[in-house]
Image (cartoon, rainbow over all chains, first blue to last red; front, side, top):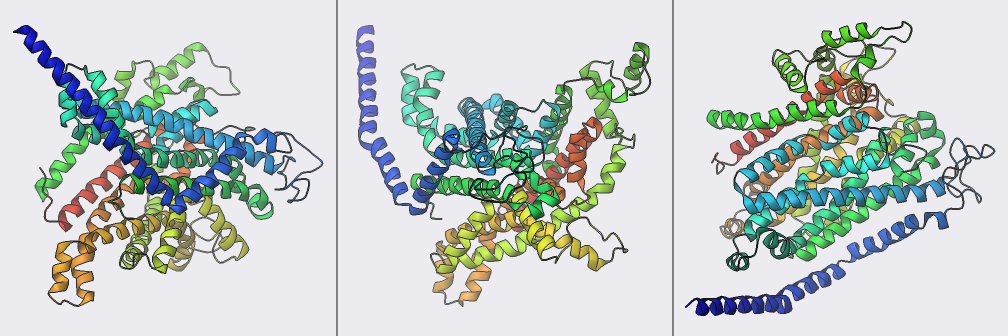
Length: 309
Length: 318
């Protein structure tokens, strides 16, 4: 009797395995391929990928492309307009703007990616727990999410940035630690619908532990809709860093970031007479965020073809 | 409706409590000793004197006790006193609040009045040249932060062309009149509104595209109604519903944009006050402004839900 039951269970198990394998082979993969194909047809998004690659590579290899050290002061070339020696001119203490823009890109992109990694991790964990377990856990997590969402995050960030010592790491932590509510909400919604599906019930019936179901079975299916959101949040993290630095509360000098280079434009004299000091970082910030947004849009269209934007 | 409003307010109470806890914890996190602010640079202070200051401000009590004291004072309208000049925080904030409210409301109205019709316009002409051009521009509008548009506008329209004043709310040499006030308001409010024009246009366009395909629009057309009537009576009122939510959700962002815009145009509002508080580490003022902003956003959320319930009769609370 008990033997028969065991073999029964064995059968179901292997059946489910087959089902999963089938799903893998015939449904999941092609869907991904279709999404990729649709993305590749999105010409604007492809062009944005190309531009962003150039920006990322030049930022990554900034030391190789930059003719000067980003913090090298040259008192004989103060406030020089763009020329052959200094492509983008120099600032008030003779630092080369082209070199600083390249290095600034490194910082800005690093903050964007670092903060997004943090916010995505926090959001995914909280969203998964809330959506999978529901009940009072869900209630508490969602109230916290609501509270963090109600506050304009830059406002808390400003307070934190003022109270904590200024450093690159702190900026990444502050931005990442406060940008997770959107991710949490999306993941929660996905988990809530996924936990009712048959393959999750099957996994539960087979005695897979909750952690296994969450990580191995549901999470991979949540990933697709999450990709677009993650892309957008890289863009908004870059803007947030630039904003904090613009107000003088972000990345501390002498490390350049596009935001703290823009800060110089708050001085009316520089705004008026040394435009080469703030125009390059302004263009780079907008261009980068524009590319990221176009890519995010392309991904969203590719994943969800029902949305015709 | 009144019932709905009351319930909506009740639901926000836990969020409000959460906010006060966050604000309090944030300031607790601050490294350094608050008593440092009261140490005179000239006169030597004894440990006993410092202890006296501690007792006077209640700093010797435990954090939960101080939180409770703070909240009790808040409920009596006492937001504490500024570190820098000892003036009451509530008074300082109320003096600046009006200027910010003026700037934000003007920007929001411009955003709605320009953005929504543009969305209707492009939504009815999908894939036309207009659609592509305006969608492209709106993308640029969404990706450009207020501090970049702000410095560009300041450079071009205030400094180069000299059409608008470079900052402030009123002329230095004359008494303010309605005309000078509008003149000072135009540039900052336009800068602040750009993001919202772009956002509202995009959502309105998207929403239009969905509604245009719906069955009741086909029915309306099949009845032989004029195009104008179909658009303004059947499509737009339905398409605008989700946009109302978007408008409400954009209010926290509006506050952020105002901080930047006010800084660039030296607008004497809460944003510049907040930055002063941040840079001067004026903790009571920081707490006060954070609280006022949170209350403002909560109130705006309730107002959004309420207007949604008025416009859409299908919405009923639970």
